[in-house]
Each structure stands twice: as C-alpha cells, then as structure tokens.
Length: 299
Image 1: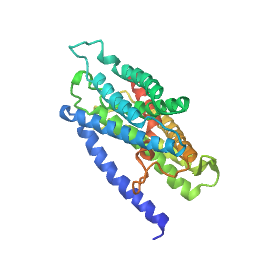
Image 2: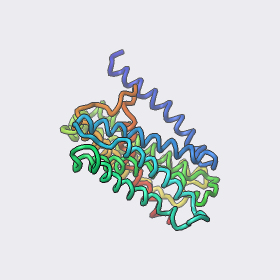
Image 3: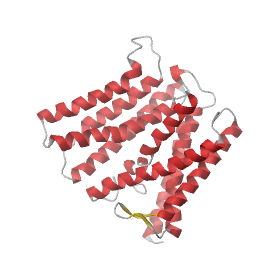
Image 4: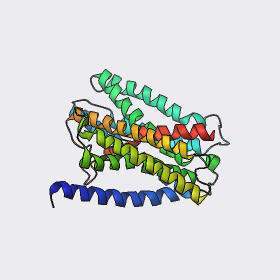
C-alpha cells in the first residue's frame, strides 16, 4: 500500500471512529448531569485549537499571550453555557450578558498584558485577541445550538439541540469529504492555488452537491422521526446546506492561509487528523450560520 493510500485509510478510520464517539456523546449531552461535561469538552477543544493557533504565530516570531487567550476562550464557552441555562434567581440581569462581559475583559486584558511584558504590542495584541474571536466565539455557538431548545434547564424530549449539532457537523464535514474525493477523481482547475494548491473547483462543486444532499437527507430523517426539525422545510434545507458548504470551504481556506503563512502543513501532528484546528476550521465558519438560522426561524 502506498503512503498516500495508507494516510487515506488512517484518515477515514480515525475520523469514522471519532464520528461514532462524538455522535453518541452529543445525543446524551442534553441530559442535565452531562451538560457541564459537554461544555467542558467544547472548552477543551477551544483551548487546544488556540494553543495550535499560537504555535502558528510563533513560527512567525510573534509572541502571543497563549495562556491568556486559552483562559478567556474557556471562560467564554462557560459564560455562554450559563446564559443558556438561565434565568437565575440571583442577579438575573447579569447572566444573560456574561459572554459579552468575558469578551470585554479579554479585550482589556490583552492591552494590560502587553503593557507590562512582551514586545511588538500592536501585532501581539491583535493576534492574541484574534485567537479568542476566531476560535473561542464560534465554538461557544456549539453550546448555544445544543441548548437552544432547553432554556431555563428544561428538558427537550425530542433532543432537537443534539439533532442540530449533528446536522451542523454532518453537513459541514460532508462538504469536506465530498470535495476531497471529487477533487481526487476529477479535479483539474485550481481553486486557490496560492493558499491551498490541492483544492480544485471541481472538488468545491462536488462538496457543495454532497453537502446539499446531506442536508436534505437529515431534514427528511428528522421529520420521519417526529418532533425534530419542526418548521424546517426542504427548501430551507436546500439553501442552508449550500450556505454551509460555501462557508465551510471558506473556513478551510482561511486556516490554510494561516498555515501557509506560518510555513506548516498541519496545525499539529495527530495521526490521520493533523490537528484540532484542522478538524474544526470549517466548523468555525459554519456554526454562526446555523445559529443565526435557528434564531431566524425559531424566535
């Protein structure tokens, strides 16, 4: 077996097993005792991705406040979780604004940190805060989507939040997978040669088609189960799947731009995966799309 095929088999195997474990965890994460565990898992992913992002910056001889950005990304994820579980009897006007308070403190802390230590404050303040906004804020939206239908700690018998998280991940990653295989088989015209030489226009279009088909399939499946995707029409699933495909591929290219600038292939060296940031790069751009859609059709 060639090295290229071996890498492909490893990639499919690791991602397949990861998908099964993640899917199981997502469907049990709406139960009250496990909500903190799910939030902690999202926070851990955010912290790891920011650490990898900071490693890219250090390749450029920058000195980001890595620990500070990891801390505030974790705090932002938990602040978002606390907002979804309200209202609270104690200081009820505070909790709905916790994510904004944490983000404001992060902004101030970046300036305070580089006032007393470090060099090149313009570059390092900007890149440190960018890590929180680029990674921490979108990943916190996974918590918002998961508990979108359980405000106040109430139960959601249909597990709608879990279904929407599965939808977000499956539709986004189907564009990645479809683009990869269609690009390998039919790819000729380069999509963004300067940023990612292996990506092709044919692959991008293949990813778009697969993403739309996955969106339609999940919409059909959810409606068949009952109580899931109520108010989500097939027309909406068609254009939402297309939106996710486009923005997911933009997210992939955005991270490729950072890696290319840093002169590395992967954000980490996890076998068959690369890095956590490589795994979530497209999701960072699609999570806001799904959350905004939910706010439009359900509020």
